[in-house]
Image 1 (tube, helix red, strand yellow):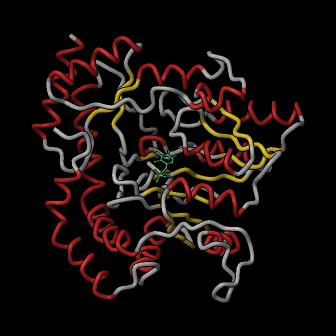
Image 2: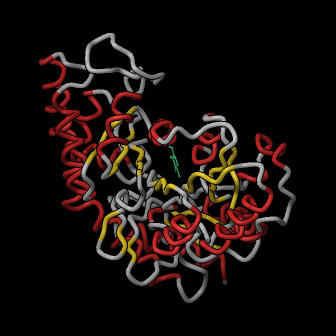
Length: 375
Ligand SMILES: *Cc1c(COP(=O)(O)O)cnc(C)c1O
């Protein structure tokens, strides 16, 4: 059994993907070919944002957003402590300081109250200047942008939506990757919409920021070729990956997203009376980048993981260590116990196999094995 079965998807979409790849190889425009612009246009329309710029990966997408805002030394950027390293790493790369906030224990997303306290503490200390917050749509459910936006507006913060896992999710009738002042996603193969390599995209309604990002992703280019008006990076989406994503985006919107939600619903129906299953808030929907259980403690979690492994069922811990306790960030001085919900999640979470090409039998078998362990 696969944790994410990309081979099953390839079997379904293979002929169309090969046709797209052949077209790119024959036409020979490997960098910023017509498929890139077509994909950006389709992504933008799906998400519901005015502009989309594709780039080389989700981490670069976050970095390009911070570059567009000119974030640098002396700036504080607020980040949830329970997420993938990229969310904070780009802040440090920009020369700014990540300030960690705790998560909501039910959704695993940034807790607006903890964010408010973190911002007020930075303001009180007066050493850093609060500039932005990076809420993460963890495991596919959008963060609470209503409450986070209220804190951000009160304190003059830009909101950068890390929708690397969020693509396909929705809240209040809007799609993920449209909630930030700038929003990003990732096309890493294991994400809800993945390519066959690395890829990412940046979304915004602001033309000025979009233009800065398009310039920054190509060495800070100006209007003429070899005219460089700012320092940038080399971060483009390959035409080949765009051609692959055009096929995969169609499958995602036509059937894969619904299938993910169906399998998640079935897992929940089978398991919810026995273990803490994912909480999707009223008015929200998740793309179920991950289907994540919350056990009672680390020992129970690790024992369930071992039990599933003996049955031939893969499971994953996303993430075993919160960012504020990573060695790379020890110098920031966060004590154990300082962000308790993030620390507890790292001890208790376990993600089950989740992808659109599961079957009723497979979901039933995984759930039965979880129940067998719990009894
Ligand atoms: C995967 C991921 C990223 C980074 O995306 P890449 O394309 O791998 O660079 C950023 N944030 C979160 C929350 C992620 O899950």
